[in-house]
Image 1: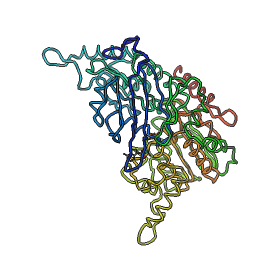
Image 2 (image 1 turned 45 degrees about the vertical axis):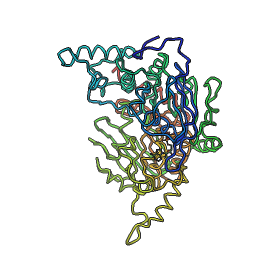
Image 3 (image 1 turned 135 degrees about the vertical axis):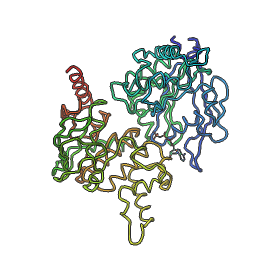
Image 4 (image 1 turned 135 degrees about the horizontal axis):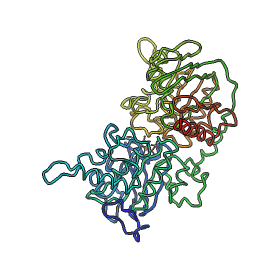
Length: 525
Ligand SMILES: Nc1ncnc2c1ncn2[C@@H]1O[C@H](COP(=O)(O)OP(=O)(O)OP(=O)(O)O)[C@@H](O)[C@H]1O
């Protein structure tokens, strides 16, 4: 067995219970978000943790990491010893390690510096022993099967999976005084392109087989079947299932996840159908930017157009550029036949363009304002009647959107945006823009971190918006999402549109093949 730990676990210990969680609960101001959770994790297993948005997954992880204290009465034991609550150092000492979606790497620095920031090895004269530090980096990366990563590479230049690999290596680096027992991955593949997902899953498998238990939080069901031995499913803070993956079907898992809403969510998703396209809403001609070369396309009223492509293809930045959030070097963007000024989000907004950026916390919302206030930001004067804004009308309006979108908790209108779970934040932001009846809706990764039920509801709202006459453009790394939603899919590669899929040709497989195929041609040329 490969030693990832400073003190490797003998192979006969594989299968031993390493984590025991008993009766763990957590309430926020009387709202019970985790209720009497019992869970066991064994050495060598990958244990998937699933649950709809707001079901309590992050709260559980935050208790394990020492960030939250649970309600009295719960117990967490690791390798037989009680873990004290509310103390991050104790959590690390007990052998918990965490790899969050936000990897926490300093992108402008080298791999070696990220791995050992403030933990370099020193010579006997007290100076830094750079040679020894670099060798340790090489050894630690090799233990993870990541020999391909140079300690001297700058993190920014690494492929996305390798960036995750560096974060994992850092979490498990040798030389730590405390053994590693449980590694928690929080949606590690959410922002990874398909091609990188496999590489990362291999690394995670390797971590588990070294004798630690892996807790793997995800919304992607395919990954559960690919990597997990066991799965636990939370609904509304309660465990509804915990069992081996073998023998479960995708349908079983979805049923556990959404309960009775299952048939409803499916029916909504099936409602997506072809519609007659109307007048031209968006016309893009010869657009060029730092990441784009001569991009031209149009979108008509009633159409939902997808944008696909691997990382670096131009897919991630085209919508921001159309909206004016980033620089346009040349080319024209017309909305309803009238030119939109380059680099001017204000002009785009004035023409009825709404933009949902991919990074909702940094650019999409004001996290300290309430959900109601964030909703109102899209159209702040809607309830203005001289001499003031009618707050009760604004509240009624927000309540109706919460209900319409199934935001949870349903009565938390006045809670700070930052206290909502990731998926519910996304629903609130989408509602904020749909509320403005935009002519053109530009959505970057609209369902990242959104669970299956909410995703179907969100898609349903987009279909409705298109049905009511909006033009919708969705850039997504999720081929299933584009295939389920779009009338047409533009495939980007090397900053250009290299293929357009329509009708029956829009399948997840075709989207992936075209995205990757064009990328290979580009590399060869
Ligand atoms: N600090 C807080 N104050 C009040 N309520 C909170 C706080 N943190 C979380 N919650 C609530 O607890 C519930 C569970 O949230 P949690 O973040 O654990 O869900 P999740 O399963 O991780 O969801 P997602 O998949 O969307 O990330 C949510 O209803 C959320 O609004």
